[in-house]
Every structure is written in C-alpha cells, then in structure tokens.
Length: 120
Image 1 (cartoon, rainbow, N blue to C red):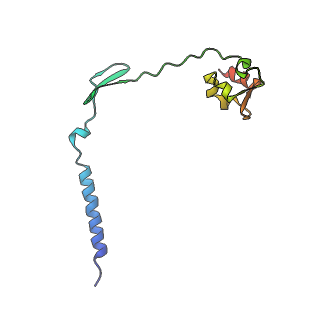
Image 2: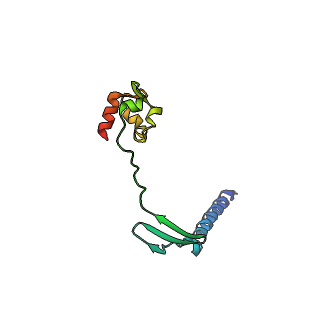
Image 3: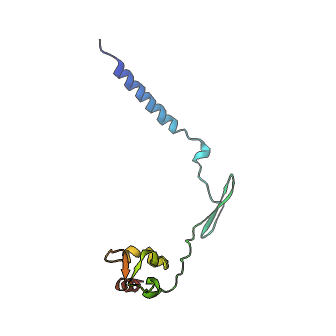
C-alpha cells in the first residue's frame, strides 16, 4: 500500500496558499482609500489628517549664492596647492574636489584650479 503523506502535504500547502490569497483580497475600506487634497495650488497642497493638517510644498529650495570664486592664493593660503581641508572654505570647490583634482594626487594645483574656474 502506498503512503498518502505526500498527497496530504500537497493538499495542505494548496489550502494554505488559497486561504492566504483570499484573505489578502479582503482589505478594509478605510485602508484602501487615498488621501485627496482639500485645496490645491500651483505649488502646494493641503491634506486633512487625523492629527491636523498636512501641507505639502512642491517648490524646489532656492539655489544658494556663493559669489565669484576666490583666487588660488586665497584658498591655498599662499601655498603651491589647495588641500581638501582648504577647499572647504569655498563649498562649490569642496563639492567638486575630486573632479577638480584632475591628476588624483589629493590636492589641486594652480593649473587645475584655473581649469575648474573656467568650467564655472
């Protein structure tokens, strides 16, 4: 006589899969509704919530103004190169330090700085 254990295991697995999918389709109505804005403008929307009002602004932050690039001598402190710590004095250069350092030696020479300033 053959064992019915594999058949029984397959039937239980199928029943569990069927039960899981049928339960997943019965979502509560409150969870499936999306929030709709109470008022919309060109650049913001207001949503009522259980804890108060949520205002979403879709305007990008203003671009910071740093002014013209300082001279090489100002940033290098009179030295022959600008180190990463010295580049922090001018945030755009600190942000582009690895790109301005064209020969990847960890410092920016006067010619590398001149090339970087031209790209601004």
